[in-house]
Length: 443
Image 1 (cartoon, rainbow, N blue to C red):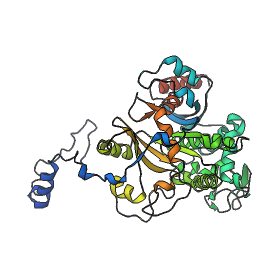
Image 2: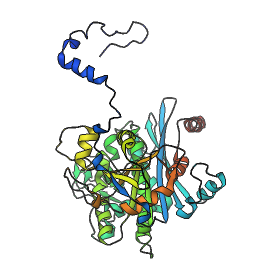
Image 3: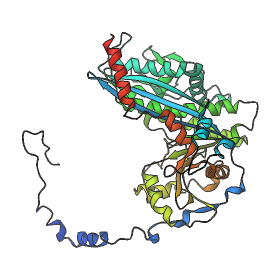
Image 4: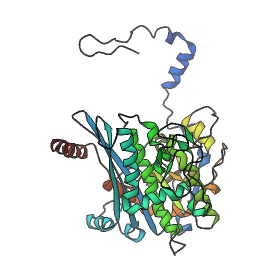
């Protein structure tokens, strides 16, 4: 790595002759010769056997749509740093979406869709150089997370956290998943007893919160917290808000409601690191619903990233007709063709994913990377197969009516909820910065 410059002394420049020995290699020269060959658009370079066809008229589209999205933005003023987090939940009726012109949507029709159909949740975290009379940043963030979930929507979201943690759909009276105590750092193997909001660590005898089970404290120290705490909270809340609607629909007197609704999350169905503790419980509930003949139709929609880039290339080789083309990617294909990685001990998404990758091509200009659920997870290279995906046919029959032509690979519900949830760096960060400055000035 070369030395950089701060302005007082010059930076170190790269050697102009250091590559001469390298290009003397026959292997290197053969690579360079092949590198200059323009075969990107050669169909032989890609595996087209993965694609299947589906006629969207074969199944009845889902009638109700719920979609969730979130955003966060850090704000710094006088060397103090905060992070604002916002997540939004929105419902859309299928009959209203069908009236929208895909190329020239009428503003009044869009306004009618959004009227009285959305709710949002917001909170703020101290990250650096902020002192509270209640405690240090470490404990402040822990309690802000607990209070934010518990008080929002009169406790609906917190109840969903308990519903997932204790597997309340099964009447099993389970404890929460195990977690590391935020005070002594030792693992509480038994978790928190059934249906409790708080408990006492059996080792250090200090109070622990159910939200501590999620593991936010593992990313912090006493005096500051990284921005990843805000981004992780956003992802967790997106999942909890979507699962709140599913929980309410599951208990609704209309037993068909939960299976006649499409639940959409902007982004992949995944939680990484310590935040993945709830993944096994989520998978278990989805499988439980399927086995009770009440399948739940959930999709995550990826708008960028490695899988979207891969699909952008291979979609040009998919033969277009009136049918939708789709490909359910198994773990072996993902490892070899997308990740281009050697065989690892843990299969793709073993601990982190509650959805599997499905590529969808509607026409030559419209394609999507979706995450669809299977409930069960089998750690094999050839899993999942098409038959493992829950509600695939009804989801594919619903997708064409949701397509937006405004962006590449866009769905109207995601586009609409993003407008509610988004807090861009400008102007939102500037507005929030002014708000923080005014508050500091009044203290």
